[in-house]
Length: 219
Image (cartoon, rainbow, N blue to C red; front, side, top):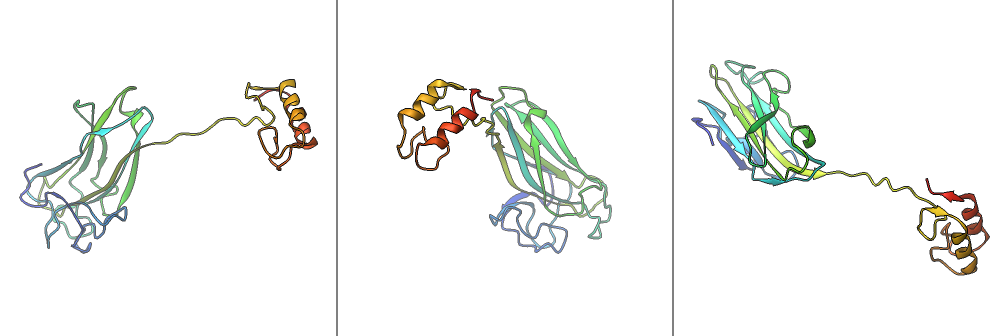
């Protein structure tokens, strides 16, 4: 959406070649991305253009990431360089928009793809189920060359498997004790199985010693 005279957001294979401050290629290798106009000398002019994502499902612990490109004329002979902004905003569960990033007027405003990741718990409450993201840029002061791009928007969740290994706890009760010792003795000479604690293919004295060395509660 927006009121620009040219340079509205569009999803394309970039075709301008990056010769006039635009993104000459996409960021994530898919071939396509969103850019502010894709023809000839087209850039953002005469107002603001806004790109809004679909509703994106989230969980507690989710992160939001995306690639962004922004150039407001500092290195492409803009008449009013470094005097505009690129905004990234967030809506949680259909609520109002909250700014999560402002680019410009100078920092990271000379083009180039930047990969950005946000920890959503910094902006959303526990139990939130969805977000929308919007990207807003415009040529609002004296005429300048404004080019922006967005690519690879994603929501992801990382986790750490911090389960503590407890060699010798054959029974899985959290303690290495006589139950595990008797299990090794009962399986003596067998090939494999949980009683083969050290995984060398046979239940023998080495497994018995592993149980004895790990005696007690698991860490």
